[in-house]
Image 1 (tube, rainbow, N blue to C red):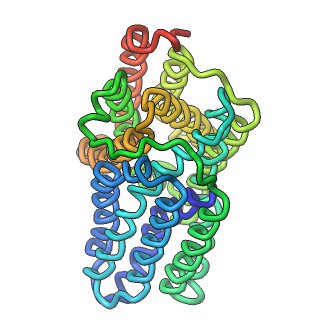
Image 2: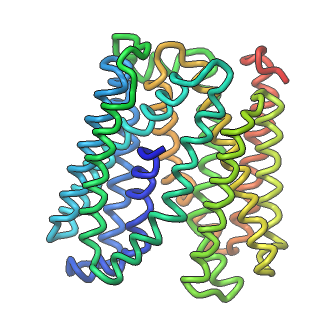
Length: 374
């Protein structure tokens, strides 16, 4: 979980302090935002081409090395005197995360007891919630009182601690293929390409909606930035609590299970058409959004892992590449919708996309995953 908290912290902290960093580096918020883009692009490419090294060299040293590389990226950010240097630091961080995230997911499931993969992954995924509800507010407070550079210094230090913990805690005898699986070969494994298409539709809807989530709430409910930030915490709380539930009860995954979760997410998106008029209703829909997304992400990763055979890191690297590609695709497609029609329309389009994904999975899964037929 600590590794996921680390990844989530790096991914989320820059956005809230964008203007502060821009002033410090004598640049514009747009230029600083390019650092976020650099991180996303580097993560997608790394996940696509470098994630399989974990299958070759084993999880212990691969994850430790990736954590050290992430620490180097934080130190580059810490020492930046120009926005281009910040972009470089975030690019290095992205290269590390593209290896780290698939490796963490694969290792979590490889070390789980048979049938307990969803439970173990649920606990690990809770790290994303912790980064939202704890790391981001703490980073914002540090920035307010000490400046933004200590934030990256602290993250670098934690990276080195996490690297040491990986060396000390990950068994050295975990199964590994001993050879690198290229992305094309991983994509040809039965069911992998189909599942990645589901991931693409689902994640593009999520990131397209999440990109305009805060601004849509501020405009519709007349909220301040701080009040809008409360909704992010509520989302994180829902995501985290659902992860703890899965970790405790380990629900049985299958075709109908994931299809129903996706349908519920689609309904949640449609509910924004009514909830956007009321703060209590909006808080409820936001919390449920977090809960349902935990169930969906967990199920998709576990199902991909089951199809991966001895190429877990390679397949989950493809998953990360598609996910971070969705960070670009979703806002790119739904941006004009938000500009012309507002957040409710964005949520409606997202709901349609998730409904299509649910139907596709329920129909296609019957033929591709007979063992998950129910």
